[in-house]
Length: 99
Image 1 (cartoon, rainbow, N blue to C red):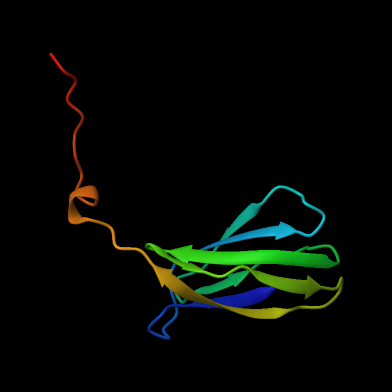
Image 2 (cartoon, rainbow, N blue to C red):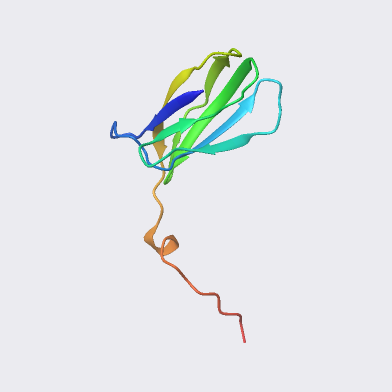
């Protein structure tokens, strides 16, 4: 399976995280997009896979993708749910134990 992750601004999302799981209920796996938002997941068995992408507080809806052995399926995952992260949570802070 190959694909690209597109953000709400219709631009590729670098280094997005792709979570996928087979229809058989096998534990979720993770893949990462490259600097151009492209990803590849190799050696998948024939099955229907649920995929979701995320990046910097933005997520895609779950997509069900049917995969057949010996073929390559191309997928576009569009990030649609934005979350605002307060600035106070993005700054690096040091832990200081109570005296």
